[in-house]
Length: 400
Image (cartoon, rainbow, N blue to C red):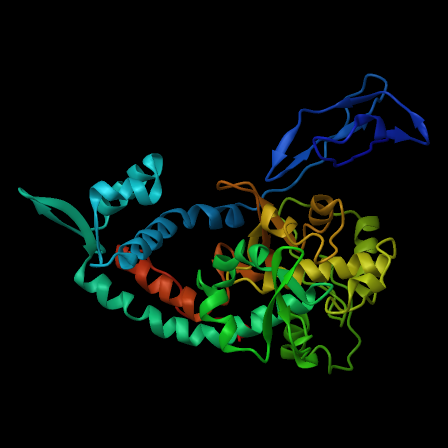
């Protein structure tokens, strides 16, 4: 049974769908929105027979990652709002101004449910207000120490992010789209960048403000994947590696693969994966202009760029919209979603939450992030005041 899958944006014409150079009758399946992209799968007619659908296997543990973040994100946001107030307290009547009418009720539920974190005072002639409870206030004081520990990590992350781009410079507004995911303070362009003139400069190009890398450092042009291989002794080992049945290969150009439990690859599929795992490819830190995307090695390099990009974030995940914002700077392929789906042993796309999110599979053990930076460890400690336990240990490679 012959079938064809194409991914296109809403504005693209369906007349592009041809087979063997000629127009053929295709029956479209219903369109499905995935983040900022529209996906439509079209199959060639099969003489009345029902075409076999492509299946994208869900990973419940990774879907659960997004579910587990809902309440903690509300708690941490309300904490930040309270701390930003002049008197470290927020009038309940002003809550709507900060979060909007709809979200206000979610925050009111959080305040009522967790008196161990949020304390409401006032009444009679005094308007009710919310502040941090005594124990929560003490834990919140530890955030400044966590931020201080994060600073060298953030400087390194910003330098590597700029080194990934084709011109070693990125629009400030683009970096701001992922500042929370990187762990950057909201005013990093004033509080962090000027402290390191030897690494960064800010320049105006055609009316846009860019952050530019001042000096290239070859010691930073090492990916998280390569650091893991060094840590595991793979690059120094002289023992000939063998291909495992799940497609994993202990070699210098291999990626960690984690296929979902329901996925059963056939022999031909595994042969192609094995061939791809052994294939050499250029470093993500080399200028992308040097390579033709049609080259299989350059295509594998794109996977390495996405892998490294996600590895630079605190929780090893970004929304599809955030990744697409770096499309031109990282020279990502036009059919980015198709690339992510094709390499579903490395990346996972979940539609749980408000937006579709791309997760780096190897960074998680079930629903738990394996390695956490100081800021995430602080956030875990603060959220534990609700009675919810977090993981305080860091397994694997260090973040810095």
